[in-house]
Image 1 (cartoon, one colour):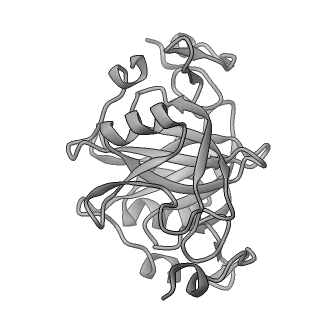
Image 2 (image 1 turned 90 degrees about the vertical axis):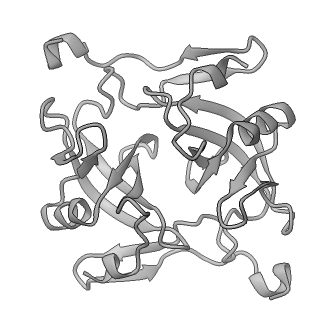
Length: 128
Length: 128
């Protein structure tokens, strides 16, 4: 695939991919893809990621069912990162929020506060 | 600062920060911050980055004048990345585009195409 040839994977073989909600343009999460993960993402139209903590390729949402269907892929000026606009099922974050960026820094109070609504209960989805 | 205590910088001392246009929510660029860069960003309200290729702290836009004023900082669920909504002067990308993500992958044609308009001429701004 022509896209793969133009990308620069880092010394661990990863490229960061910013996942954006196709519905409203909100940034949902930042994930990391190997060449294989990106290839599988492009072939299937579903986001596959390289889960660094588990050191393996996985379908984003494989345990929760909260998968992401790819609508658009863009690369940056240097080929070092991607944006993927996706149709997100339920929510992107394992903590139960639509976006992983549900905490905002309040510089006046010097504290971090939750500014999004939880849309599912992680206990009932992941059974933890 | 309370925010800094909750973040996990990687083994190189960096955290990725997704820069989002406060005007329209578009993803502009992905940059990397050291603890010092983030601290300076929070103190001054202007984005400072750690330029990996030059191995130094710099004001984003220091040579072009295309600076970024911070309107909002969010952290992700794991404290491993940030989003910064900014007021962008002129453009975020050194290639002359508002966003670094000006190239889209066309899966049918298997090629990457430019889908944004150039807003400045890099030659006249950077003198290259």
